[in-house]
Length: 168
Image (cartoon, rainbow, N blue to C red):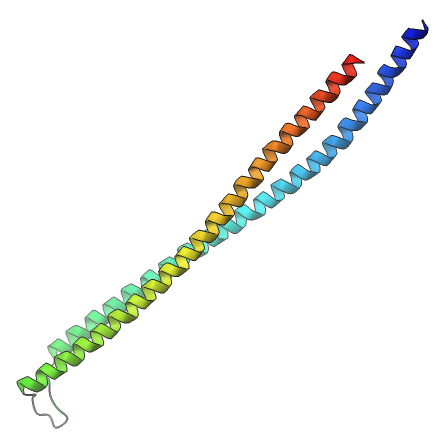
């Protein structure tokens, strides 16, 4: 009878410890899980923001390049449609005409160099944005892995507590 009373007392203590442990453990894990979810949500929002920003920058740069290309084409057409004349209204000689064409070609080359620099800058900005996106994706993956590990630990802890309390 005494042994049964002791066994019953231990079972009651075990249930109390189990309930207390589950409550505090579950609260801590739930709090940590909520924090991880919030952090994940913030990172996801930041990732989306950077992706949208990168897309907008690319669109703006593309529009700017197309506008410059159109302006360059219009200028070439305008130059080609005009007869070359000097300041006195006289037409150029063939040598002077060649010089004017060389000047026009030089301006076109300058325009091409400008476009190339802008394209290089655009590609650099895009590369930086892509690198940042990859870094955010890696951090998201790490957080998801941590989340899975915490869930597994909680499940293992709860099972361990249940098993030990039943064995007593």
